[in-house]
Amino acid sequence: MFEDRSQEELDSLMKNNAEFRKLYYHHQELDKKVSDAELGVLPIGDMELAQMKRDKLAAKEQLLEMVKTLKA
Image (cartoon, rainbow, N blue to C red; front, side, top):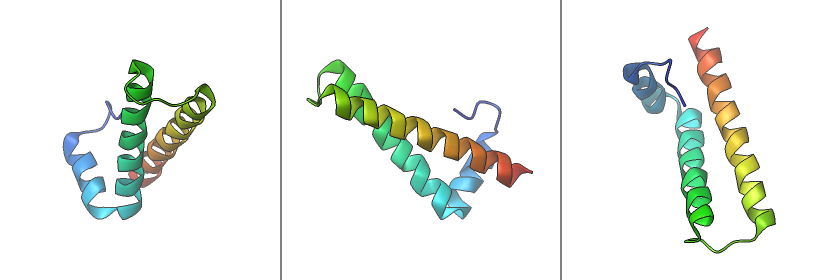
């Protein structure tokens, strides 16, 4: 997701920005749940899966915006 950022920069964000860290872990959690649901490991309905995917995308967009804003 952050291919254009150095690991050092991301580590610094994770360490120094609680909001970024919380949102990053939330995105990771949603990513795991979506993957599990798509594999059939997590039994959920189509509507719930679609909502999780929307939430995951929203979190990703927020993270990217935060990185962009903090970089500027």
